[in-house]
Image (cartoon, rainbow, N blue to C red; front, side, top):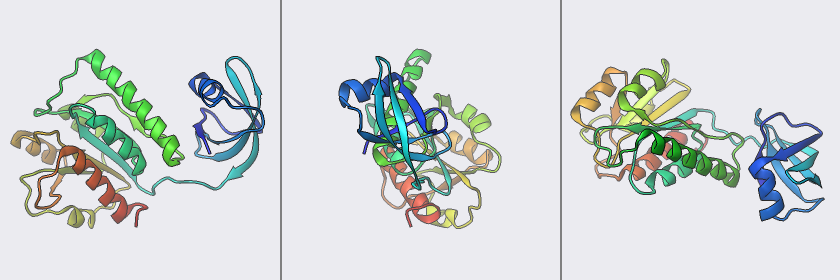
Length: 244
């Protein structure tokens, strides 16, 4: 059943406008009597019936509230250094499917791609659209938030909050495994920092450690950056979240 996210609180009758209304009327060619799932700002899920159509709005009537919360007990944030081609699109989509609550695109020294301010803003709009669509498709009850692109130093100063568990994946780390690190994590909000194709420089690794980050290894094989992001998020959700 089609799922929509509604900016507001579920009520007996609501109106869907904008792109979602256009999709229902002109792409799905919906008709009165058809039903969809609607998720509101408080993560409530309702089964609703389409009852009326206007040029720019669809009226929905609430049929029943559903107990369908699909959110993880942990707040998992993926801070991903910028990747080339469509790899960032893929990482954002999979982060949503794996229950992350946020993706922070990070500029670091070895990033291949270099965006100016206009291009970075446009990319974030694209990534947010990908995240929103993925949330509908995989049955999330909350939308993942894609943050603006930020430099590594600014990320460490502003985006990484006190009390978070900040874990970063470093190819020169040979002793601390992710499993061992997670055994000592008590924070509810866990931030995973994954490097670009070229990895982190020594200076950057030291900067992250000075900011409270813990370096870990993902095993003896060298993983592509997008593989590392997926493997790390899966492992954290299995150990501390809802994949176990």
